[in-house]
Amino acid sequence: MSTTPPPPPPQPDDRDQETEQHDGEHTATPPEQQPYESQPQHGEGQQQYGTPPHEAQQQYGEGQQQYGEGQQQYGTQQPQFAPAQAARPLGDSEERTWAIFSHLSAPIAFLLSAGSLNFLGPLIIWAIFKDRSQLVRTASAGSFNFNVTIWIINAVAGLIAVLTLGLGLLLAIPVWITTFVVAAVLHIMAAIKASNGEAYTYPLQIPILK
Image 1 (cartoon, rainbow, N blue to C red):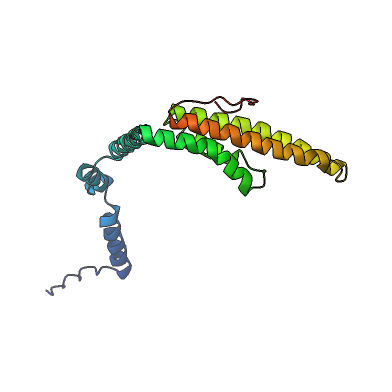
Image 2 (spheres, rainbow, N blue to C red):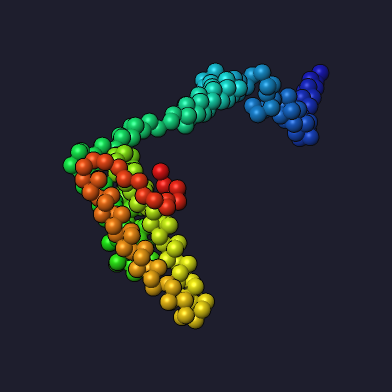
């Protein structure tokens, strides 16, 4: 009796192997497609490591506000200046000297300016010493006011001479001589009184300076 050998086991088909390989690849989950929960919480780590964004902005805003208040307080500070010192009053000798010069400066200016600026000398002295001596202020103001009157009289006489084509010089020249002599005499009298520390009152004053 002959023995029949068993049939060989079935060989797997190549197509079945490829199918199994593809199934295995599909069943294995790639690392990059793993669930979100398994990945590290990168954002939370940054938030825990540093200051939260809203708190950082709030602190930055408070810093700007404090810096602005500091600038405002700095800007509101007013500079403090030392009070101006009062002008030193003149001594007795200085007071008399400048009072005499207040009276005599008018005829000197009259001669130097040909009668056009006889009031300039007393005006300068008044502006410089009006707050330092009452005697000098009274003398220079009176001399200025009187010489303004003399200047107006001389100017009117000169205008008449021009309008009359020189015929008015017959009137202007005597007026100019008279005003000069009268002013010179009055200024000398005023200077003598100033040397004694006394004030002098001029006639025909136009009250401009006081």
